[in-house]
Image 1 (cartoon, rainbow, N blue to C red):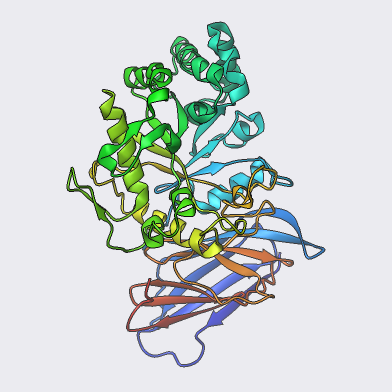
Image 2: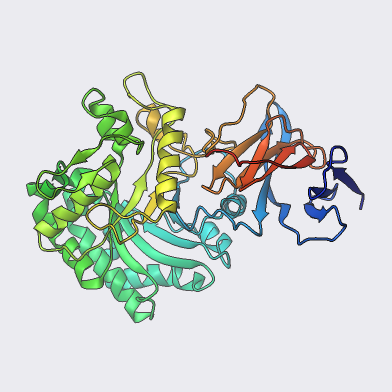
Amino acid sequence: MNHSTEVLNEEGLLHGEEEVVVEHTQNQNDGMKITKKDMDMEETMVEAEVKVIGEVETLVGGHDSVFCCLSIVMVDFGVFRLGSTLGVNYGQVANDLPTPEQVLTLLTWLKVSSARIYDANPQVLAAFANTGIDLIVTVPDEEVRRLTDPQLALQWVAANVRPYLPATMITGIAVGNEVFTSGDTTLMADLAPAMASIRAALVRLGLETRVHVSSANSLAVLESSYPPSCGAFKGELAGAMAPFLQFLAATGAPFWVNTYPYFAYKDDPSGIPLDYALLNPNAGMEDPHTRLRYDNMLYAQVDAAIFALARLGYGGVEVRVSETGWPSKGDADEAGASAENARVYNRNLLVRQMANEGTPLVPDRRLEVYLFALFNEDLKPGPTSERNYGLFHPDGTMAYNLGLAALPSSSSTTASIALTSSATTRILLFKAVDLCKIDVEAVLQISEMNNIWYCDGVEFRFCNQNAGMQN
């Protein structure tokens, strides 16, 4: 094992400033550690640790590279956790995705604590064991009819849920996806019976208190969503949806909705303010009937769904967001689809979730949201935007920088900020050919109060400044 030690701030130290010792090793499992000593030689606690928590093999520029996931854990200041704020959708309609084990490394790095998948893939379920990540699994549309049979539903739960509990924290089963806007009347009619059969199987196996049963719906089930107080379901769907809504009310399951302000903006870019759609500061709108003020479209759409449920007598059913996001790329006629808009939307959503915001109608109940999606899915049909909702490309590189502060870009830059907290703790995804010689041209800055860390490759410098960075 070949260790080396670098002492930083060797010049210009004043009394009261701190000396930083950085240890790193060529053994990737040992990682790097930062310790701090004051000028009186009294050791202080280890305040930050940089540690390799996994790697994803990929092919970049014709050469084998390694993606090293490194997280900087600020002991004094706490750790930014995506999972304590946003869930994430882990779709797999793509070529050359990382293995479930490698994806788990990425989710661990992001500190994700909840995820949704669109099947019940046994490799994913096994990989997520003992991770603490809450997982919602899905019964695909083509399986719904079969599971109306109580015995087959029992077999499905016994094979796809029970063996993995409690190690894999399966908390929900989504039956179908956007069934009521599929145009398939048979599928619509089968949904509630299949959900009832699956619920009965959970009860029989003693799992009903661990796992809820529901189904994600497109916002297009609403006839009206503006103003929110006029939210109402489409008349032609009311009959088909009645058994489904009755099931949710009887079992205490949530109404999941896929809501995308991007779609509304794309269809009417001249009529909808972009800032309102992106959750940016803006004048907003006031609902003339409730006098509630909305400063973003997402919350208005969620409250419209709440009003629609209440209109049919299901005001006690909680609305949660199963999907929302913004595409980083689109066709010429897809207004607003850009990496910058995707970055702004997801960043603003993240900040609001970190503040535990509810909607204007239900301000004291934190809105549960799952971001769509973890990866761009290049095998999806449809317009270009459909394949570009991911935070990451299938090979693990970032689709865009979601950080609160931008990094300088260049063709040779090999590091990028991933996600950022309001406390400006930065997390890096390093792309390196040699683990012990990380070539980082971009600069990572971590500030907390008056302290700023600078990371430039494996060289760290600690400075005292009069003011921290601006978010």
